[in-house]
Length: 424
Image (cartoon, rainbow, N blue to C red):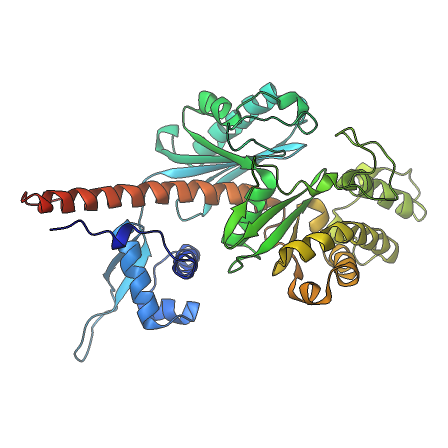
């Protein structure tokens, strides 16, 4: 009997979207859903749900069992409940920003069990930062009631470009003290587990697409505006990293009227004009006129609480217009469905978003500008660590699906050679 290949062929874009949508809804629901419930929740036809469920069951990603609905009257098949396949283990997500490290432990359905953050200078002290991140992970795992031997996958985001060919930090201008380091190897040595490492903005995009405001979007830009400014680019449902992994470094786009030196060695980069530190200094200056104390950036409340102040709103809107001028060119080039705003500036809410909308509407082509919705991210400061968790969860699912496919191929191969398949 010839080997069947249909179940192992790459999914089409439509089927991949359906699969991701069903898995996300099952992860949110937690307790399992019937096929009809999935159809209502997704808006998909019963046949599309049936096809998707069959594929996910073969991959080992879901289980289906008879529903316990009490006494059933009448005839016909009993309803079944579909849920994510359970694991006894946990996953870990790590987010390294320029000034903090966050670790989170989650179940394989993405539910966070424990989370910790420590403020650190990440850019200039890689060794101590990696040690601190490993200590945070171990503390989170311990406090979640688990052990490191139960960790199934770990993923981490770093605040700079990673050469995707070698997994080594190469950029001499961003994370210069990390040049030559292979973060995945360093993490693995400290934690005793393989670690998937990527750019923090890419992780933020993945977090918003899996759990936040970008769910259901296949073409969007996630803009992390904080101490640096970077973009996670998602095209056709996949993260676009470029030839070497440096795509999305929009913070180093040069502005014509800016002249300050940037850490990259150039003058007038976007992040010299708009970064969380620069904006907070401007806000401290503006708000000091009505306060008795000195101008102190550290004394400001979170930016989300300043949007109703007219003077603060002007500062935030002006920062949005500056970022929006750069994003308008990307809207022209990529025609995204949305610009999802994250980072500390993204959390400022409507004034910052309104400034971006204004510049996109003014500088992008009208048709492209109308197509690009500007929205605030739904996960706030957790977008990057949630994206790392989602990456770790997908690592577990991919491994499980690959194991299931290998077993099917083995059974088919044995049957093709006249050897009966094994009972398992």
